[in-house]
Image (cartoon, helix red, strand yellow):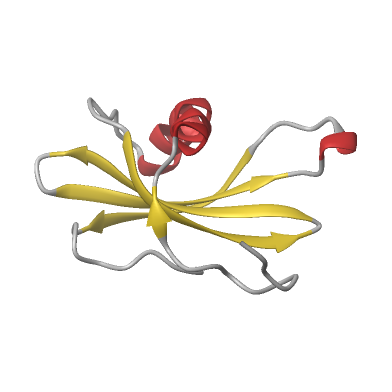
Length: 100
């Protein structure tokens, strides 16, 4: 899939790599949300290529509740960890994931 730098791609089903990203940033997400999540399962995502990659991920957190994550992955040579940039809570399964 080819994308221009700065353009967000089309949403797609979550992959094992995206679930790994969610697992890594779960403690940051719980801190930002001020709550613990029993479930934290990636459902769909889109990416935006910048000086690194922004991942916009829809995550099921239990019941009918979802959160949207914006996670920044630096370029490999930067040797920096993933960063949870922002979090949107109280999202429904039908709400589209996209840039925020």
